[in-house]
Image 1 (tube, rainbow, N blue to C red):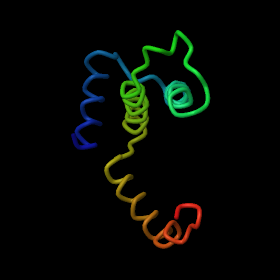
Image 2: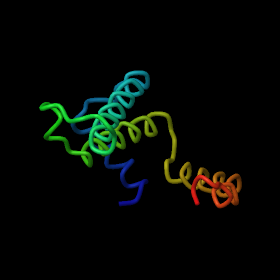
Image 3: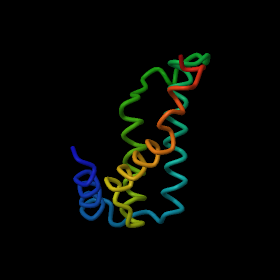
Image 4: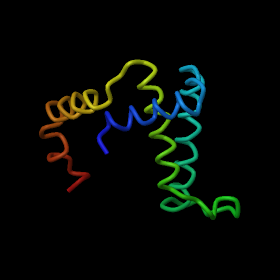
Length: 108
């Protein structure tokens, strides 16, 4: 799915099912919460923490989708075209880091 279509799908869902967007500050807090839930799973699966019984039925893909959902909500309500933003960001990183990672001894 293209990012532009995802932004429209989320907006359509909000209009049909969500009544309205939560305000930007609420969505920012929710984004932080969702990232924390994803971080907890990653810390237990790939890090040194062990799973608690309440964490054993995790769905990492669903947690990532929750992060994406709230990020798309924030983009929609602040007028950000995520497709263009991502293109611009890739160009920025390409120009800035053209040799940076190739010359990083830690990555070799």
